[in-house]
Amino acid sequence: MPPESPEPPAAPAAGLTEPAGAPALASAVPTDRPLPADRPVPAGPLAAEVFGGIVFDLDGTLIDSRRDIAAAVNSMRAERDLAPLTVNEVSGMVGEGARMLVRRALPPGTGKDDLREALASYLAHYAEVCLGSTRPYPGVAAMLATLAPSYALAVLSNKGEALSRHILKGLGLDRYLREVVGGDTLPTRKPNPGGLFLLADRLAVPPPRLLLVGDSRIDAETAQAAGSPFALTLWGAAHAEAAGTAPAASETASAAPAGKAATAGAGGEEGIAINPRWRLAQPRDLPAALGLAENGEDVETGGHGEGSGHGSRAEA
Image (tube, rainbow, N blue to C red; front, side, top):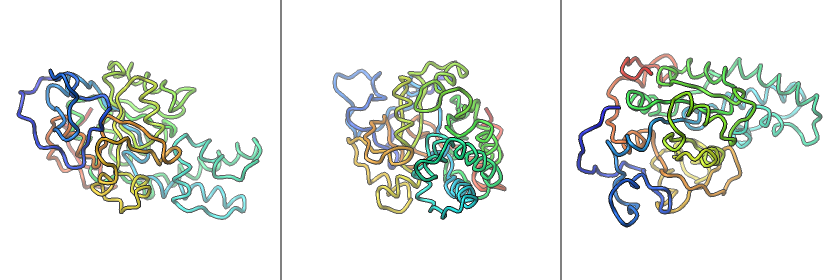
């Protein structure tokens, strides 16, 4: 990546904070004391030295898939004369792959054979509806379009690889990504770091220079196990619900004061502290932290809403 000319520090991006005690992006800045949380995050050439690639979680980070997942779960439950679950109930079960989701969505004590049949049923239903109401979160396509020319981008999900690729292609986000690793690509899945190590190898970026961006405890543990930096996203619905606020990114950011560890509500037990390098209130905060101006291409329109724009500059 070509070096950029040093620029004076910009004003902090709205909603972007660097928790005290987290590994500072400013570690390469010649200073004998930690970077205060209210100082601008170093960007430009320094960020280029620190990160060689960026890996994103899928559900809850890039896309809002809650309603389609809940619809598939309830179709599976209806076949077993079970009452439907709410979208929020199903969302609390998501994060550790389809098998665990189905196990949580069925009554305790369900036998192995019934679980196997229920999993097959859920996967069949989900394949039919996975693009029904699923959309990228607002600003995600523009974020990816801005980052792709400068960084190797990839997705690491506990959703199956083929299904993940199908959804990403259907939403027009695949054009920005070099690699996709799913929950069935390897015998292990997050929080095991194997998928992140595989992406590090495929992208030719060592794990310490591979930033993992996600919304959950599972993502944080994956990054920690791999020795990779982690950025916590706050624009997903799970964080808005946990904070008791509307799902506006700026509001969710204010619910997590600077200098304190955030907590993960999606994909794990609520209240478990995680200590990310950054907490990102809105997708545009990540390019801003890396010193990149938001791509001006029209990536917010198209057949599936955001993510269906046309911009050759962002193709990976």
